[in-house]
Image 1: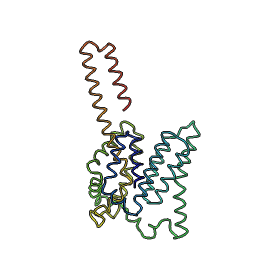
Image 2: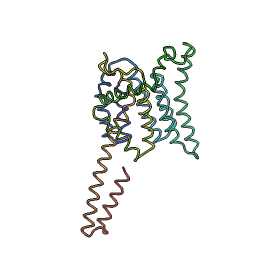
Image 3: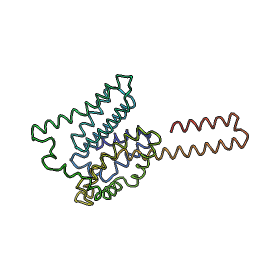
Image 4: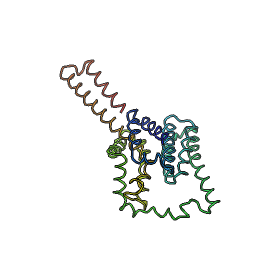
Length: 286
């Protein structure tokens, strides 16, 4: 779990700066779900670690390129899918980033995208093949009938429980995280699409799961434990809200300064031009 928190910090810092990284790490680290799963030898901590590091590698590959980053991202996220089958939904942001990173005139981008997808697929295919040969079924869920537990009719029964347990696990940051994802759509729609593709499918899938107890012997997080892998990008989006508020405050101050310069007769002078240039630079950065 400690390694997962390092990845959470790096992801949030990559997207919204160091403040968001610290904030996201503190929120995830102090979550009741994280505190319980840190000492529980089940698959949730491992899948969170693999998913977080895989998404960080994916974002770094998107920014910097290189085949080894693509291979690392694909392998980590593919292995995450072998730890918990729900992590197979992370193939959606993988495909989105691969498409966004393609350049028609550059063969290297196609090769790296192919390496990303191949490295994601390799561990998944190996596990499916092993299961088929050893158990006669593609997954253990096929033998137990657990896969039939996902159905749309469960959403109506579970959505309130899901929202309450997400809110309990994230404290007051759940609405801020959602707001950050919405704000990001206007600022960088491609990145927002990738983060929504990380967050939404998994949350919807487990909202449609038959097992959604409000409380249990596990301290009330028996249902919330399905969601940690989809939480870090919501926490990081709190930094986007902070960043947007800071940019808005700076813009208001600069516009007020520009108005004062104009009223003082300096609107067409060097002082006025300097404030206007600073205002445009500030908005461009955000």
